[in-house]
Image (tube, rainbow, N blue to C red; front, side, top):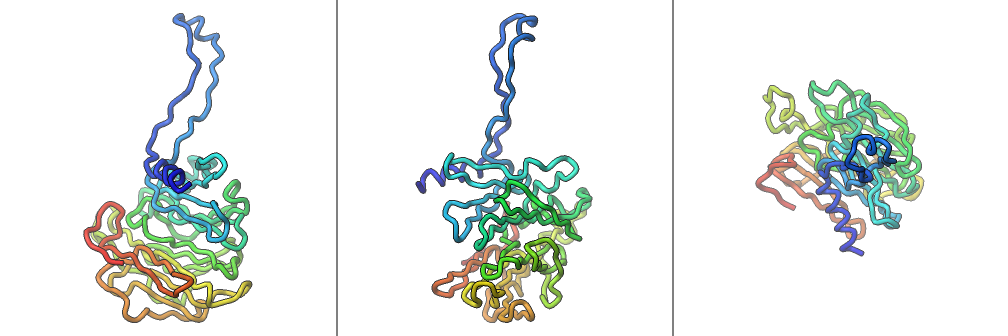
Length: 304
């Protein structure tokens, strides 16, 4: 089982395959060929672009999603051992929605899934980002536009997840935003959002702040949100939340009162960026995976 799943994931990660048209063989003359009953179908490919993250639902077995930087989002189909594309409905007018900056699967109502979408944050992409929300595991979506851009194909796209669902009160979601936009919160299943004004640090890291193209000057900003489920009971907002910020000196923050106030976690590592923050729910350890750059194509040093 594990070997088959890993093979499927590798197929997604290596999913730069092109599309090949399957047709029936024709005869040698053009007149006869024109009369042949050609049948055109989509040929399955296993993904598109780089796959920065595989996201597992924490309560439903085999409910797994993959997000890509330019090729949309996918859901694992256990019965067919294949990946189902979820954003093929995106047209040219919303092409940036194929850049999935983060994805969150609801551990309470597992049919709910959310995607933070937007391709670029620099000038050549004129569009703001959006939150896509679904109540049928991504088969259909509703859209909430955001007042800022998201960068599914920008530096730091492998960090995260910057979008997260409260495991105790799943109507609450948090979104970490790039480029000085800070931390955002929804209390109505992602339909509306407001900035968390009490959060103290929007992140200051950029690979090259002076890049004239506006690409390497991108600031990943607030890059992950991690809940401690043990700090509340079902139906009540989680009180202890950890947030990672792309700042080499002040990177990890915590609230113990459901986001009313935040503090820098004492004793945290400095000199690196916190790419991932995962909480061991049973033993209470917070694991931080760090790198000296935002990535995903560089980085020479790091710690766990």
